[in-house]
Length: 154
Ligand SMILES: [Zn+2]
Ligand SMILES: [Zn+2]
Image 1 (cartoon, protein in one colour):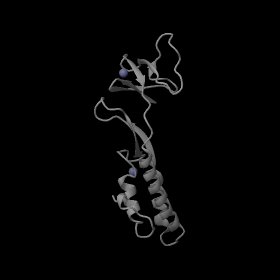
Image 2 (image 1 turned 90 degrees about the vertical axis):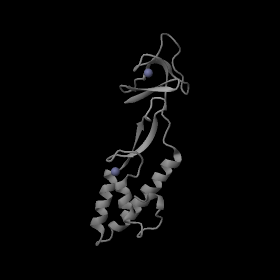
Image 3 (image 1 turned 60 degrees about the horizontal axis):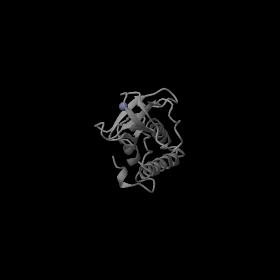
Image 4 (image 1 turned 60 degrees about the vertical axis):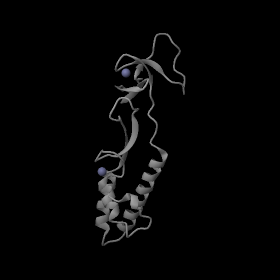
């Protein structure tokens, strides 16, 4: 697990055990309240800091990925029933599973920008999803299934 601590404008990454805060609470101060910032001593640098909760993936980005996933799954599924191209479609479905979407937290180049949550391919990693492999797979179905979007090009 990773936790993040904000020190003014800079951020620390802290490797934490399950359920452990990235800061150590100070002395006999009040216990953290839900929804309130959690202040303590950073387990990485020992400076006072505030626990930083990385915000979720931007909803528009997540929705665009959902649309792609749905479109490609439909395009592939409809072909699996066809004996001529069924094997082909099965292979594509396996690629879809291998190159599934996951989320990760990345740190922008400098420690002066907050960590951000991004979508990435489980297999290719990299930045963003769908990955190039899935875009190529999808392009193969662009004329055989309605709803293709140009932004999905490889
Ligand atoms: Zn720190
Ligand atoms: Zn991939």
